[in-house]
Length: 329
Image (cartoon, rainbow, N blue to C red; front, side, top):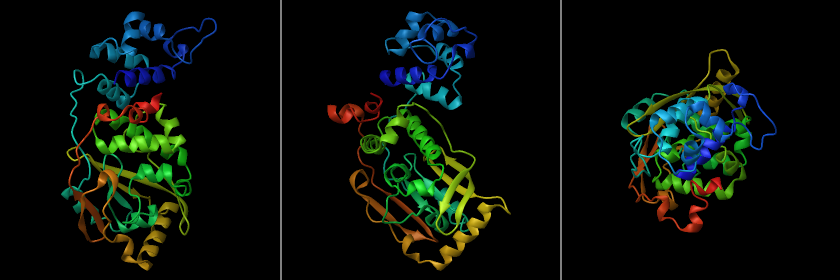
């Protein structure tokens, strides 16, 4: 994780200009943003010590990291990410195994009552575990189709039509995956997801190398639907810390274009077939072995066996190059 820590710190100091920390630029600068000596001086440590921290040759105290975070103007999510990158001494970290998840009972009970809104239950790796009929209509979800939102976003061309502000949605998605890659370094599904996207999507690689981290989603999201047109919806998010699942509900204020669009989606849903809510087939590759839960009041859920979690150290040299850290090179 040392390489990851250094890459993150370099990417953050590249965003800060000397004037932002009260310094006057002198002469020609060879690097964008702050130099190591400038970060060190502003944080109250020696240049040699900060250099060793950035290179992974010194383990800083939380006080030093807090000072560095202040200099680099990290937000709360970035500060948490920085602490996680230093390892379990500063951020106790559980390397648990995660895979095919079933929808938490509380999430299901809420979801079945949201018949008039698009809503989805997402895993930490952005697998859609359950959805309402209007979510199927809005997002084009189908039991037989791809249900990972990151794969859909980067590997399916139609996603650029669905999301007119595709670049913003893509950046949010990668920032989320970058953050949880540190929180869950041994998550087999996450490792495979990042590795797959890193060799199939140049856009993903470009955004991954930015080292941006974020939690949650923007307060508005723009959609395009062939029948309902272009409209904005407001995501409301309910997270379950225990199961690391997220319920995302898309709503609109009364009298807005988005509200009219939801009415149109409801009409299309009532006129459509129930086929898209049939049970999903067995997922292949790393999601093999999932058993499907019968559909209940328009909600589709999946649960089942958990495959063995693997760390990056267990991957071959070629695979590591395109794993969580290999993308950064």
